Length: 427
Ligand code: PLP
Image (cartoon, rainbow, N blue to C red; front, side, top):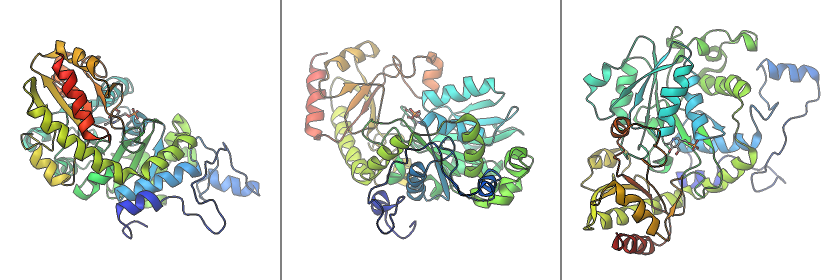
């Protein structure tokens, strides 16, 4: 269906396509396992000689149809769902890294991703060099080592709202013969397709706009199929050398452009088992059916809220890539001209101490550890999601200690502004 239909149509129609007499709506395949007629056929599945479902820890039809939809929205060749966005970023990196590998990581990635790479994956023998995404190319080039295996960054960083210069990052990654992995959670494929600008792998926390209703935690990985792993067998032995656990198949040889996702499914899902539950995949699909309607509304509302905050006397600064005053306005216009996201960050003149007090006065916007769903919500990262970071790490992640993250929902924007107005009056 890709290429044939616009994104709006893909959101509704892609993935599950019922044949004659089948359910109109994507069924939840609530089954751990799948029946086969002969033992020989089951054997062929285990040798990856035949495609088919065998156990839901690896793959499930409901998930597969939803992954196909996300794949088409991103313009990729293959995709998989994971239990969470954390699992998606973990698998995306671990699929091509092992002990002794090195990753170039943007300093502004989400705190959970930062922690995953710099603390947990470090214990697995995978090292990182943290780079400032705004640094000039010469500076960024210095971060690469002989054992570098990928670059990881976010299209729009959470919560710093740094817009990635995707072409610059793709160029430096490719100059060093490694892929660029982009977490496209905040922009969503409605606003930006990183593959168009040279990214090789895209990840998502589907828990955000894709689900859109804060109902289910989930993640996705999409491969563009553009990075030719087979050119670098020494760097990517896991993809290019025989896999003894599948009788010596070489993923690149057997699966071509599908090698990366096939390996992540048959090896990482098999061994680590972070599958998204089919029920969550079903709900995610319901969310995806309105993604093309919700995202523009989030952006439209956020633009108005950002402009309101910028003109407020008690507000010290506002960061929203849709504002002309934003350092990232031009990059946003280039990579996502239709809109960026619904998330705004701002600080109060009264400083960090006043942030919590103002938030406590909000009535419509709820204080939640979440972002990017239909309901307006608010968080103070330095006190909440990013509290494990030192002040120095906070600053290099683009998270000022006074930063309030305001996730604008799709309610009536006048009500959202009125809520802020009454809360700001009280401080
Ligand atoms: N990536 C980004 C950009 C995020 O904002 C988040 C969560 O906030 C994650 C990944 C992690 O996703 P999840 O919470 O679904 O594990």
